[in-house]
Every structure is written in C-alpha cells, then in structure tokens.
Image 1 (cartoon, rainbow, N blue to C red):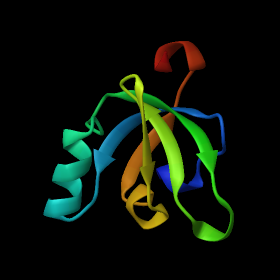
Image 2 (cartoon, one colour):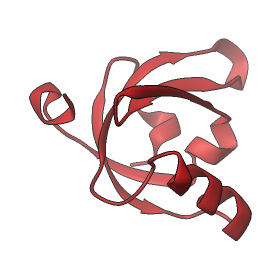
Image 3 (cartoon, rainbow, N blue to C red):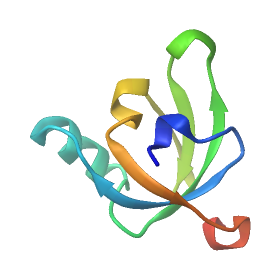
Length: 80
C-alpha cells in the first residue's frame, strides 16, 4: 500500500521510498526512512497535500510524493 491511499488517522510503518534521488533524500532527511512509524493527520480534497506525523513532528507532503512511499498499516500504539 502507498501512503497516498491510506485513510485519515491511519497509523503506518514505512517499508520503502520509491522516489527520485532529490525528493527521496529530502524526505529521508525529514524522517521518512524504512521502519519508522507515523500517522496520517489530515488529507486535503481533490488531490492536494496531506499531513503526516513522523518522529514527533508534522510534515505536509504532496500526493505524488506520498504515492512513492510504500507503507504497511500498523497499530496506533506502535506509531506513538
């Protein structure tokens, strides 16, 4: 499953980043690395950006970037 398809409030664990070098590196620097857990905070309508909480801070990412982040859903307690 990819991050852009996850519902609002879903807890997730990052499996893999499938993004270009520049974008992938930037997101990795912000905490989007394999094994890290997070929560989808909010999603905008009509394909706008989405907000995810990773490593105790919130990040707004574009939907096409979120589509490059492969995740698995996990328990809320694991994401905390």
